[in-house]
Length: 320
Length: 318
Image 1 (tube, each protein chain N blue to C red):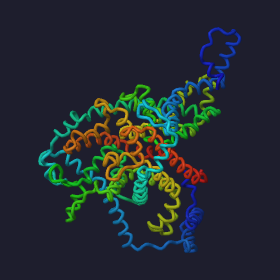
Image 2 (cartoon, rainbow over the protein chains, first blue to last red):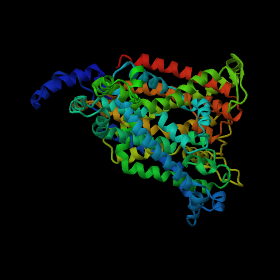
Image 3 (cartoon, rainbow over the protein chains, first blue to last red):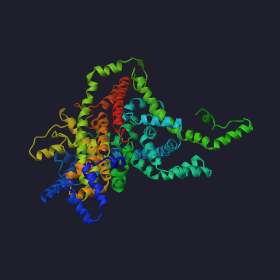
Image 4 (cartoon, one colour):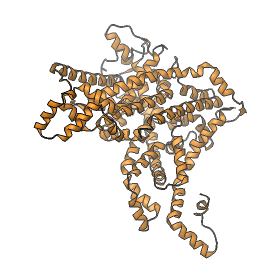
């Protein structure tokens, strides 16, 4: 993000900024402003400013309404009976909240099993990514040899491959390894094809001085020891970033599970919801309840980690 | 790399002097480096070969074959798959749908920039606004798609009432519209759903970029009495131009690989199929893995070209 700072600003303002920095006292400043009328913008009259403020809030409020309205309808619908759903308007309140819809979606609709499977996959893939990702980044960033440079290049090219189209041929590999229709298929794919995480770790390692590992090496620590007791603990902020990105990516991923785990027992949150379209196709109140249940974990995580998520998702993507 | 490969395996009984020197070498700086490189990269490289290198090579090979999902009947067909792809217009015409998403991404970037700029001024409840607008990005794609199925639904009076959008229109006395089965508007509906889902991310990105502009420049502009528009035109916009360019390149890549929203909302029907949906259907529904591989190769080629352009544009900035 630092490069944006260097981008030259329009000359007038830049020059004015430079000169204001030199002049400190208020008298000098007044003098400066008198002499530099060429740089002065026209004052905005007050009514215009008020209209501007109103417009600003109008934009924000309508944007929020656009986000909330589709969700609100789903929330209302989740509490309706089927008769209410087919007879009343989308904005009509349910006469009595139907908590039973949630129970149906949770148990009969397999959302519970979906949440459990998603949780297992998240746990395995996050652990796997952190171990292999930090080790890979450590070697690739610290040791500069022909071999590590070659591996780096392969990773760079691999990051460009279009993920979903690749499944046409990844499928054959998963199938011949006997992983088709097991929970290991998505786990191993989330670990094995995650190059962004390696890049985040490498970026972070760039900013950790090598003098620390060198002195540890002179003290007789081997590289595994250096990795384990020095590098890994220092990578903690980067690990947090990767965890956030992984959670959003895996919890919301639909296609991997849909393709590799067609079995009913192996549904994840996404596929459990997707399968509602079949048996519950006409029972939208149950689908709505399912949607609400699936959103709640994301909502809890979002509310509790809001600031952290903003900064980490963005750093993660810019590094790409 | 051939000598260190043999090094870690314990040699059974070589001469004693030689073994000590090998052990010493292993404990030394270079020896440790080689061993660590090898051990640490072993699993990642195996995974990389299995799930990236082999599939990528196979993609090239399969594109000259006719085969099914499990590779039971393989026939070499030369360039036939590519010929089919380039002569049957139904394959490439799916790229036309990408243009809707590309067009939509301009709207998305413009609105995101507007909202980000507003959120960076003095605003009450800025965090609440930001949170609400960002949240759809955190939501499950299937949930978003189902929500928009309902949003655009056309009621039939028996199993369904009118969806959200039609209900709003009817409040103003307009006739309900068949949003999702009319090929001339359905793609715009899907683009709307896509913007709804992803715009929060762009806003956060722009806010980050705007906040990284030095506050001194704003102060100077305030002293000069710059208004909000002038602030935007002369400070913010030039300051974040590289990010905007990057976003547009990413938008091209995004719009040629659209998959999830049309796949779940309409299943690719009513003229909403995209190249990726077509590829997946060709491979897994119609079992033409050869043809699908050729499609994947074409998509990869396009992405490589766009990436090349991206690299050329951003080389000076680095």
